[in-house]
Image 1 (spheres, rainbow, N blue to C red):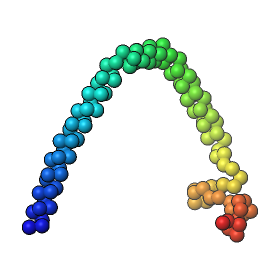
Image 2: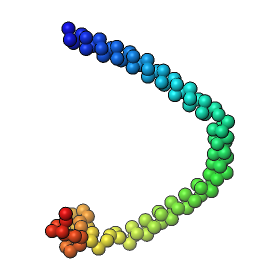
Image 3: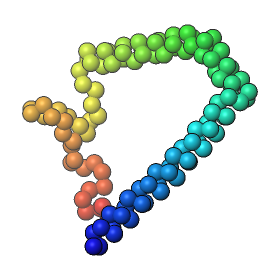
Image 4: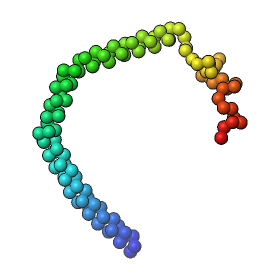
Length: 111
């Protein structure tokens, strides 16, 4: 009997929650449509589109140039070999290893 009343309570909660959820969803949807349709929002969207159309090619050129410069830097470093700090080296196993001899606070000085 307790199981049946529990299931009935769950079903009632689900139905009531679903109704409240749908009403709130519709309220949010209506507010979002009003905001999107407002003259201020549409003016801002128009300005953003205009800026993207006029400034987009210049931004794309700058990004392309920066990417080419970065690729060139990486290529230069790769052709010279690894540029690792003095405290890191690549071992015979191909893995990176840290040199812990004398750098850092040391195990006895850690909190």
